Image (cartoon, rainbow, N blue to C red; front, side, top):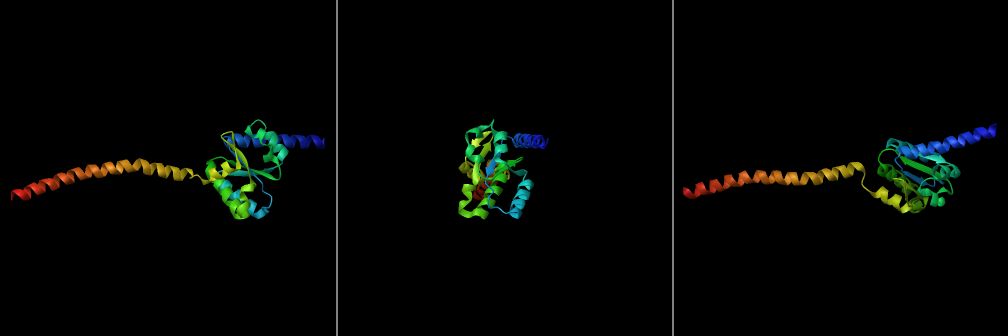
Length: 180
């Protein structure tokens, strides 16, 4: 009876990982959390939660079962050593930035080795790809840059339109001064 409960619990965990992947639109990053103390890990989890994400620590066999129907099937190395999964339910760039910053602070030069890889839009993303994703501007930065690009021609047009009557007035004034 006890063994049956254990099997049911494992199936529930696998299903919950699949649900999280679906909720995160096919985005997950796996990292090795070995060497991170409980308190810093709980702080990281709180930061990630505030950015619209979630960190789940789990057993590699259960993670593998949950993600065996994805591009991660060919990347079993992800499911070795202690593994945590980062899911982003809003902006994947923000939560990935937080994770990479935390790993840099905690492990300094060795932080890259802690990132195992993951999925982005259901496709495999390498550890280097995760770092590159963390270096991208976040959604707010991109929107403000886009607004700046869109605003520039309008500002130029406004100055041009303002300059036309000004030049006309100056020209008329110069003609008037010449006649007197």
